[in-house]
Length: 403
Ligand SMILES: NC(=O)c1ccc[n+]([C@@H]2O[C@H](COP(=O)([O-])OP(=O)(O)OC[C@H]3O[C@@H](n4cnc5c(N)ncnc54)[C@H](O)[C@@H]3O)[C@@H](O)[C@H]2O)c1
Ligand SMILES: [Zn+2]
Ligand SMILES: [Zn+2]
Image (cartoon, rainbow, N blue to C red; front, side):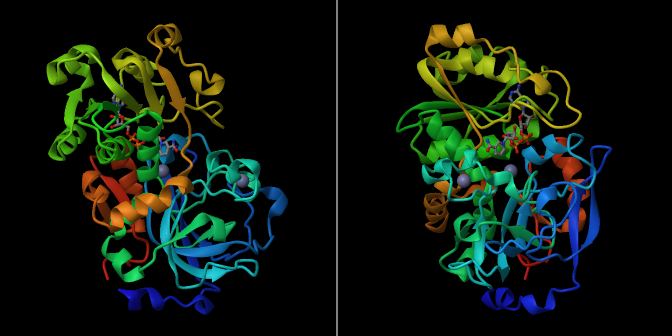
């Protein structure tokens, strides 16, 4: 396995084709063949036009071992310009490093925090990398990680090096989820106040919901129940020992009484958001949040990793242009239930969650049903995932996980 990684030779990269998965104007994705641009910023959608042609001296180029498809990618489709490079979940080998990179070496196997940040601003300094003021300095939409080669700025800060590359390759599917969904689910559980013995309900049995449920169990919850209307995803959740609720079968409090004898749980997590791809009865609303307000014990907390757009660029209508969702705030106030929304500060959680995986205590790839496919299969996988496949698709552009 180590020899596979060592075979990567950065001097051979000039002139290489960089297959890049991009958004289409029709709301789908296609693969574009681009020239390898190394540490030099391109022009076009997703890049800051003021910096086109600049060499990012503090950046590295990563050759992905894996780069996953996420629910957050789906929100961008139809909303970002044609040709925007997709993807933000990245694990791979450093193949080039800029002159200002000190601690990250060519040949190292690393996880990249999906929300790259500068490490220098006031928010980064207090571990709120999700609020970094410089994030969009170079790459305005996201990493564009679903490609053969990916530029990562502020590399010394943004990459997490695996201590033993050979062992890491044995657990590569689990470790691939450190780039986003495991920290995201874990953060949802933490801000919901999950602790030893508590009862938990997670809305959404997609990869983030399953990661939140797995995290809640890891944090010591006594009961973890997941709700969705997608029976395949509920079956996957039940297979891993979580309670499963089909949310179309009746009001949440009534279903909770049947399962745990109480109409509410101590902590709830919204892993759906307002843009939903699973045929939710009330898309683009606070329907999920409002159901969680009714299902959270008085004084409890709702963790909200699910995505609620404030201003989504491009086509989205209604609530996504105004950020107003019809929240039952009076009910939350009366119950003393607090709302804890945010993008996750991935970097904050990566080291401890990496150790949880390496110690064998958090088998997250099985729980989310991670499946490896080639980059060329990504167009179909986007469609399948958008239609609710009970799978976390892990793209392996160079066939490195199979060697
Ligand atoms: N905060 C962050 O940093 C962060 C990071 C990653 C993902 N996210 C967001 O987390 C959310 C989940 O991501 P994912 O990859 O699992 O997405 P996904 O779209 O695959 O999963 C969402 C699930 O919610 C289900 N659902 C729809 N309506 C529902 C309802 N009323 N009740 C219960 N379930 C319902 C769908 O059937 C689907 O299974 C998305 O909004 C995504 O953008 C946020
Ligand atoms: Zn993601
Ligand atoms: Zn910053």
